[in-house]
Length: 205
Image 1 (cartoon, rainbow, N blue to C red):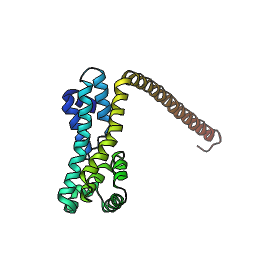
Image 2 (image 1 turned 180 degrees about the vertical axis):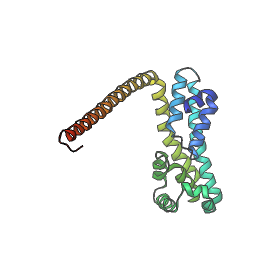
Image 3 (image 1 turned 90 degrees about the vertical axis):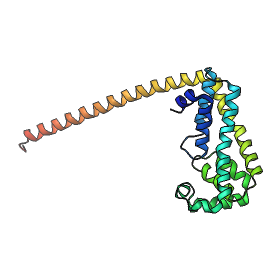
Image 4 (image 1 turned 120 degrees about the horizontal axis):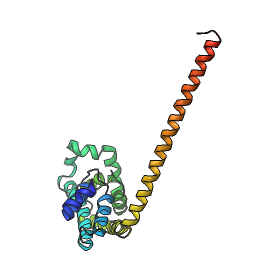
């Protein structure tokens, strides 16, 4: 679905998917990046535009979360939608982590789906300097985003072959499972029939 969305809206689709994922939507960052790399390989878009768009989309969502937390501070914690993401327990843990190791916390949060949105909101609330936040976030993204994009761009054909083999194996496993299930049902029915016949012979029935 993400691949189709990006294919239809190309660069805007890449940016939107990554931006929404950065804001907390259940879209793993790797999926739009991999989709962009694969589509660039197929010629639907130019890689030298798609890759920077991926990078900007990632940082845009993260920055918006930071500034929401920075602007509204702890007042944002009264919002029900925020509390669903940033529970009190998580809030205290993140605030403590930012006081001890702000840079390490940003790096860790970027790679943990479900924690990222809460952590970057808390970075703003904790008043982590924006220059430090964006510098660490960008440096981390510079490692992950181009790597994922390059893997999809250079190995799209191999991935397609692997997926084809996986689906073929899955079909065989499903067939064998159905055969095993059918055999088990037949054996149970046969045993039940034998038990009934035995009861008849013994005069129980």
